[in-house]
Length: 257
Image (cartoon, rainbow, N blue to C red; front, side):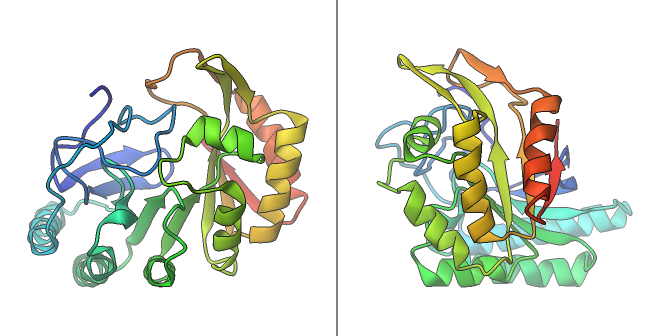
């Protein structure tokens, strides 16, 4: 297993390029990655088949988060976000809904000005209760990395049979109360060349964005080592050109380098 693996249920805080001072929450095992995607750029490395591990227990997380927040508060640390991230897709945890409630309550107690963020790959949204839980957070940040089905599958390599069109349909159910994150890149993997920055791909992606009507869109390039080789980082100039097209739809865009 290559890549960055978070060895604690509560980690950081770290300085995030998107979220400021962010205290991370990992609901997945602390010794391996479990995800229903196998993204070619994932900082945690490849999703290994048939890997099992102990998920973070709800009561354990609640205790660990309380202790971390007490410590940060005693140090007068300026916390901006409590962020569900970690070693895979957080919403696949069976207690995700209850854990969101616990985290929100602790945020309210210790850092009422901080936001609760979930970084999700958007694959579990066929379950209405997952959407309800995400809407209880301040910052549901949902992945949408391609305009076409072909490019979506090459980049994200769904292990759950999730399609791009179904994902877009589910994202529309948020009625605009979400943020879309998209990583732009190009390269070759297993003999297949791909590029989600082409005119065709961006046009299709923009159609999805216009349907979803998010609060804003996060655009960013590769920033860390990737499990797949032969991937190219997209320039800030290219991201700015794509952002201008999103802005023309009346939707705010934020670019991260």
